[in-house]
Image 1 (tube, protein in one colour):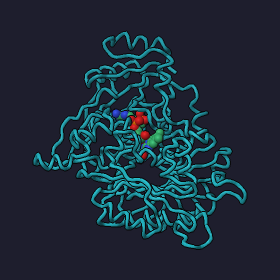
Image 2 (cartoon, helix red, strand yellow):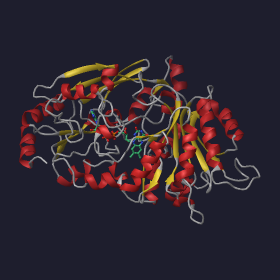
Image 3 (cartoon, helix red, strand yellow):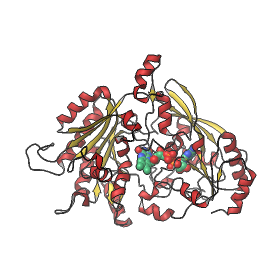
Length: 496
Ligand SMILES: Cc1cc2nc3c(=O)[nH]c(=O)nc-3n(C[C@H](O)[C@H](O)[C@H](O)COP(=O)(O)OP(=O)(O)OC[C@H]3O[C@@H](n4cnc5c(N)ncnc54)[C@H](O)[C@@H]3O)c2cc1C
């Protein structure tokens, strides 16, 4: 940690800025959702910035950055701190920069929008759809112009920021159609500020902009992002449940606990591939994962009957009959339908049960669990999911279903290069680091990619051990002093 007098002197030099000096408050702001991982929770205990600041515009940010560079004070960027790896938790103290006030839409031209990094994803979506989200497509048609929406966003869209999704996220809702945020064509450009005594502003396009993606704010300060948009749809959220016996896919056969999940998985795949059904999300939760939702929020109990797997889907409202027919074909039963925009307004969207929200729901009722992030191989993805579910997803005879070691939660997406795959956020009963590593090794041995969410370095998560050369080049260019979120890059500073 840098010495408090150093940051006090910094604050005194820039008195007009919106500083937070209260140590408890600064410590709170320095924390994200890394507590999902018992390993990170222990490793990051007590780590905090020395001071926090909320720049109101580029001029304030630039003055701050210049001063930090001159004084060699570390600087860590914060969006909404919903990241999962302690990404915005400073390891070396210094200044935590809350980007939330830099939240303007700079412009929108047809299906392209440029916005400041601190804008919340929900607000950005509201702006590009038009004010009346529920009817924006119809409204815009009336006004003569098409309406748009975000191509993909994290399930934390309500609070998470655009810069945070770019700096620490992957994608999520929408990725079943548009792939992850990093798929070429989704992010068109970035306006980046360097951390130097004379900070430079640089516009990066396409792949050059993507070099900074998911580098946890270590390779440059993103001021604005330019995104390609999708045509807006009126989305319908549906839950389809699949039983294990006579009421589900198994007909009159003896109940088989895996049958419901198998049927839900096949339904998810068929829906993902159905060319005439526009879709925004397809999540499949194996029994007993839906039980975590109903235990935490009992009003959802009629939607998620015990003993059933569930598919949580968002499809175009016009495709409801086609989706329902498909569900029936696979033995599913629709237990819930809701207009997505309305559900979001009422804080009752099933989108907040997908992606890493399943971990949040589980941890609320079973703090002994943690999670993994995995990606299955295109073409073999269903087989791999089933193999891993067979191996780790069943409780021992006589034990309740939620005693199983790894509970499966699958998300269908298009990978960055196109094919349909499954990713998963399986819920793991945590019995120690060694056993967790054994499970990771077993997944990898089965050909499944594991993006380990229990690591502290950028290189060791999604990048699989090595920082891409383009990211290293960006680091050299935009943070030559190594002051951005120091300690998060294992390969920086490079050996002499
Ligand atoms: C319940 C739950 C569900 C989640 N679901 C998803 C999901 O569906 N998909 C997904 O991808 N992630 C998901 N996440 C992770 C996280 O919510 C998202 O990645 C989110 O978009 C991060 O946004 P944020 O504003 O909270 O970023 P923060 O956590 O504040 O920051 C993330 C990283 O980006 C850096 N950063 C922030 N702003 C800038 C900037 N302007 N310039 C450069 N770097 C910057 C920070 O330094 C940090 O390293 C989930 C997390 C939780 C807790």
